[in-house]
Image (cartoon, one colour):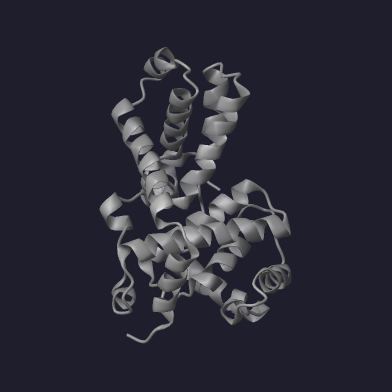
Length: 255
């Protein structure tokens, strides 16, 4: 993998927000709204995380898988690429890319175990292997993903943060950013800085001088922070299985 973010395919694929939140025409024809689109992606991020716990892979694999899933739906419709199959396949692909390989049969076993009462989650090994090839094509075979975790660890150490609660809050905030599309739009180190900024406000830790020494663009950091806080408000509004079920039912309907 490329060791420099600025020369990587990840950097070259960063997008403007207005290009990320776009519902494909095939999905629009089924009545999928932008709200539905966001909700399904958030639900699939949770699905990947739940599945990852069962197969016991590290958080970096989860983060890469979610990034792949979000990249896929920039280019492909959910009507053609069933999110319930794309999500575990992205986890399968990410486990190989991050050198923590998970067997497809293990994923199939746990999918059936976790969703034993839902026929729409009944996939076989061949389904995952076939979808893997489609996802690779949708990603243009670009599998490099840089995450905020390394920057976060370095920044916290550099800032001399020893408050365990602030450290845990910062890490939790970074994990939560994968429930949104931030990784597709912003350099990972700026996402890390935004999470530290939010955590410092909540923990009432003054790190202003440290931020000034960094010479980071605080307007960008604060804008990302607001995106994160806005997401939490929106999440409470969208929460509920009824909304998620209604969004998925639209995918199953005929246009």
